[in-house]
Length: 107
Length: 121
Image (cartoon, rainbow over all chains, first blue to last red; front, side):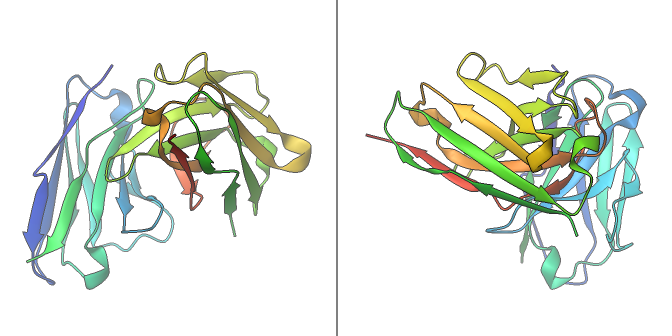
C-alpha cells in the first residue's frame, strides 16, 4: 500500500499570501495519478486537481498542482477567504490511499 | 447538475445493521463506478467500498470486508451499502462518491453531503 504524508499539518497564512502544500508518497505514484481535494467545515470534499496538475471543472486558476514520482505540491497563488480549508491528497495509481490532510487556517 | 443524496444513517447499537442509500441524478448513472467514503468525527477520509458500472468489480477496505456489502440498482439510479455487525469504530459520516470512469479509476469527481452513522449503546 502506498502511504501518503502531507506537510505541514497546519499552515497559518493571511489572505493574499501564497500557500504551498506538500504530499509525499512512500513509493512512486504511477502515471502521476495524484489528486487534491478541498474540504471546508461542514461540507463534502471537492475535487481540485487530478493527474497531479490538471484542474477539475470550475476550479480557479489560482490553484495549481505539480510534481511526479513521490513528491507532489499544491500551490494556491493568492489565498482568498474561501480557500481556508483542509486539503487532502489522494493517489489512485495503485488502488487508492488518502493523505492525512493539511489545514490552511487564517493567521 | 450532478446530485448525490445519501440517506439511511442514524444511531444504531453495536452488532446491529444499517442500510445506506444514495440517490444519483444529473448524469448517466450506469456509465460510472460508485463508491462509499467515510470520515470519522474530526478525522480524515477513508475509502470504504466501490462498485463498477455493471457491478462486475467490487472492492472493500480491509476494515469492513465481510461485514459490509455494496450494491447498485442502475434502473433506480441508486447505490447502497448494507452494513452488518456494526462497531463503534464504524461511527462516521458516510459519503457517496462518483468515480470519473466506469471501472476502478478511484478518482472521485462528485460527492454527496453525507449521512451520519453513529454506533453506540
